Length: 411
Ligand code: HSE
Image (cartoon, rainbow, N blue to C red; front, side, top):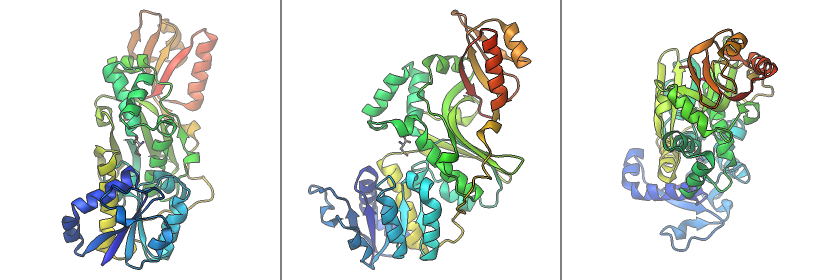
């Protein structure tokens, strides 16, 4: 009988084991074969768990068992996950991972390794938790040329921003609540600074555009500086501030990936994504726009995606040569962020509209002058980074400070 193995018995790994055992009969029927949970690798002991007898501490046990055909990697991080996954693939065992850090940093190497050994490296769970997005991009939407992807790919930051927008909590209080609820880690850096969302847009960009996009090449700005004041005023203007991970294909053929807080118009479905939910909007020449929505994290939502990959492998029994991307030695296909251009939300330290019009040519019609001498407005025209810089400097020369600025997500 074929066996499964799970590397890492943390939240996601234990979820994979428990969901598999709960729905084993259904899963076997859907796979058309008998399969059982063989091993769970973890250095810790879990004597009280019903699957304690399956725990092993040595990866060699899994590698040496020919009945193990599919392995779930739910350890997180690069070391030792990369070596373990590589060894599994070299032994001809397919791997399904939930580890976005691993896929974003080394996906190209592991995909190549899988092809060489006639097995598969799957990573549906690495982006958007329960949301099917990897397989749709690679299969259902494969007839499309993609022009843009934009998403809310981090549940923790969406929860924090949502609390600020809807419940008037400031950033620190909302972060503390996210930690209390177990969404944000004790060290919330990867979520709050946008690194987690960056890894996920790297994976989607690599898959959609066929070349590995490394996190180091992506402009990334988190939400730590978002002020309650702006979430409120933005709301009055009909926009919500969201941490958006996006990539767009430019006319010159290059792609421009970025992660940053953006003002999202309330007509845009992404502005309606609340709490820890995630959503991804994909734009293609055949489909126009398609939207994917669901739980972006959590034990069973993520386990569902990992098991979905494992089930596909059990149904397939062969490698999928097309699910891959090139590894690249230069980043020529990635446009410099200096070319990024958008309309902007600005909050400035002056109510002198004439000065603002002078600097921006013409500011938009939606203007709010606050009681404490600030002006909030949206620009009429898009600005690239150079124009933005020039505008901020020109305002400074006239004694006007830019207190906050957010690019507006194109609809
Ligand atoms: N910390 C991540 C989030 C977990 O909040 O979305 C899933 O990658």
